[in-house]
Image 1 (spheres, helix red, strand yellow):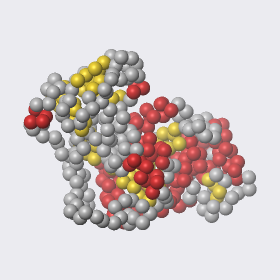
Image 2 (cartoon, rainbow, N blue to C red):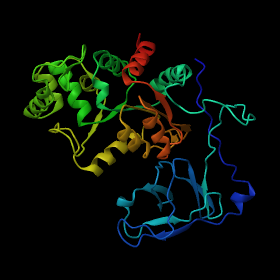
Image 3 (cartoon, one colour):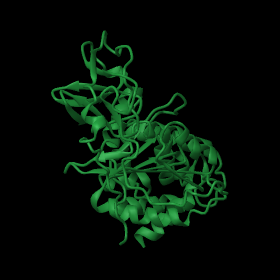
Image 4 (tube, rainbow, N blue to C red):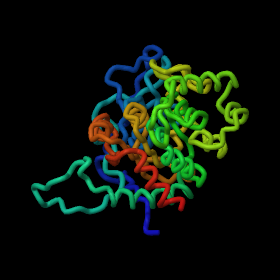
Length: 363
């Protein structure tokens, strides 16, 4: 296999701008949930802070949060988790002037010809050829299965097609999923498909609508709630296929976050927004590859909690690969517009995407 992780470029702290930089200024939070004036907000990039003459990396960063110095380390905290007296870095420059360095060019990049002043087809659209992206992703997935952590973010359309459900289940069965983030709808329609053979009342193979099929998803939710849990529903009702079934069978954790328009919901759905966010982040902190499919809001939410780098348990700094798969350029481009600059978009339907992955990785 030719795949190799990009090398991390360590800053040269012997350079004059680092040596002569002042220590970062720390100011206490005046109240719970309130940062001091001129607070520094974090980005998706590695960030170093000079404390007592030493440059310290914030190892578990996320966008739009606060660097808090505590017990010799920099911790990244959301505004809602700030406590009165927390010592927050203040300053809004990024090139050492205030003891803050944002390391934007942190990985060795492939070399491209940048001398041409003009070129066509620089964006990611339905006209883009994605063959190279697929080939790269197959290699990434093989690597991550052995050495990384693969996190999936799924919208309900992932459960609308019979072949796609089988393909994704085979990816889970073959070790290409370490956790799944989704909402009530993905789990509901996947379980509906296993229970009734439909998704929102339409047959998952021929897409024909069943008589009174619009009851099927709420009948399914009702039955799951009768059993008290998804796992017990699967066991008691003899469910033996599908995305959620494969997660349960293979002990792959799934996080289901609630929304205003949820039906039911299923018993495992996290109804408190910030409990859901914290639970998502607990899995995002482990992820080295993230793939969001057919869910703009969940993927952007995940992107806002995902930096471009991960520090492994061995202390190795490596890149995080982030893919978004959707049928529209709007969804693909909106992720990068919201700050996930390192994301890679593939404009296609999730059924074709996941079937391509399964064919090349599991057959």
